[in-house]
Length: 249
Ligand code: BT5
Image (tube, rainbow, N blue to C red; front, top):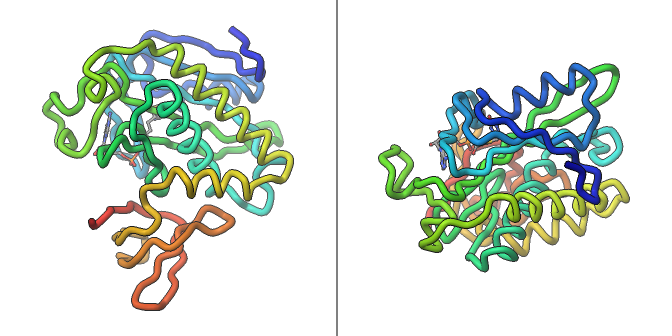
């Protein structure tokens, strides 16, 4: 299926990880714009080797992007921000829910995680590519399930009290993503950053970010041009580019 933005979707029943499938396809010559979806992932991946639970009912998909022109100057930190803003906007437009982006890679509904994003960069055949993996809890139960993260996560159907069609949300996310890719390719990254700021539930809050260099606590002041989080710790501004962020209040 081709949509008007040139995404071409390949649909699978069960895979280990849509990111892994799409990366292998890219190495076999599949072009950017390819999308892989699966009904179930048996080995869904989170960041840093963590597991992403992916039973039937969720939207598990990966999108292949060429990063050469849109992510100049090593602005790869914008990738998850772009995907998060796309998902949050689609969830708000389609379902009128209180969706927001939490730095760096989560989409929240209220104060619970409803979506995670995993961007993987690689180079194949002389081209710089990214696989953007997007996992949205849609019709799968999370709050009512018995995961260790059940108390801090949710799904769209649990918020609405009814199941919703997966395909309309998928289309809306891809449209938002295509629009933001075009923005970045035409050098309008400030628009993306402003969009992210207006969707953010992180900025203006006290946060604790665990980074490879230790914990950084303070007020989340802003995001930098490369997508890093700027944290004010007692008047000292810390710039954090990777880490796990907790909202403290
Ligand atoms: C993420 O990692 O949030 C990135 C998740 C990306 C998943 C998509 S699905 C399509 C594509 N294919 C893949 O293989 N992956 C991508 P991280 O920030 O590290 O969060 C992982 C943590 O979230 C886990 O350690 C759990 O605590 C929690 N978690 C796991 N499954 C969850 C779920 N379904 N909903 C909410 N939280 C979950």
